[in-house]
Length: 355
Image 1 (cartoon, rainbow, N blue to C red):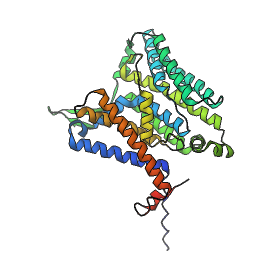
Image 2: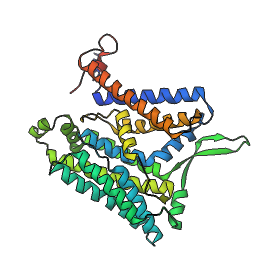
Image 3: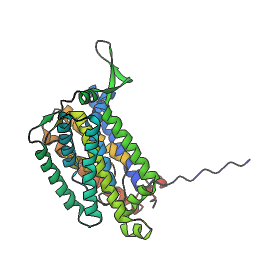
Image 4: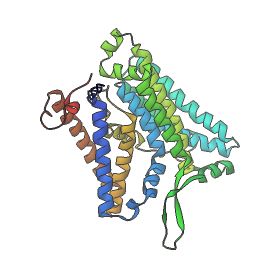
């Protein structure tokens, strides 16, 4: 009986190559921190702490990834989060329920997504201008809702905030000999469920392929029958919806509303997407890479703090340097790959380009 010949290994796409590089850099960075500093880096709780602190960022970065894959940009997301948090806190303190607060968060996010998506997609106004206006509008509306910082007084929501998912087998033994289980917030579960849903949507559905198509070449996508305007509109609606959900998750983590909430979230989300392998030019990106982009930023901040450099500008300098490094790395890798510059250095299934 003849053996079946081995299947030829498919070459990596640009997206998967960049995601693989990001994942490798993240693990190299984290393992280096474990070797140098040890301590908290050796415990699973450090990873869960980074997830707890960045659950809202993961959600909003997924929305940014979809928009950027389609060749757009959305810098209003931080303002939307701040508006959602303040509105929901005031609503809860005024006697509202958790359910209606969640609906309010989703409604605010959808309103921004629908309005900005229509202006960008159907009136063809530059996305940077529209979303910049959206950011200022959301920040201004936040101060109208309440000038003073607000803290959640709703007992049911406080109980929800304090609910933790315990994972005993990933815990550690304290000095007194008792087991301290690893703890994750509900927001982390919400973020990971959304991330997996978007991952499968991008890979397995016609809509997901359409996002890549209009980002790669909108004219070619149009000739292939893709409704470019509608697809771009949907990308902004999804981004707005996820911003609303991210605002609710952010409130579950902080329990307070402030006009400065989520300051810089849009830049962190864009940076996470770029570090995760999403190209600003569109057509390339993956939310799994975005997740590791968020975790890479969190690891950088944790390393800087552990090193004793607690001044905030050190984190900003480090993140800026890493962002420049990843953009340069992406450009070099894709340029060499397109010209066959990897031949003789690494396996063919990496240096060959798959359209």
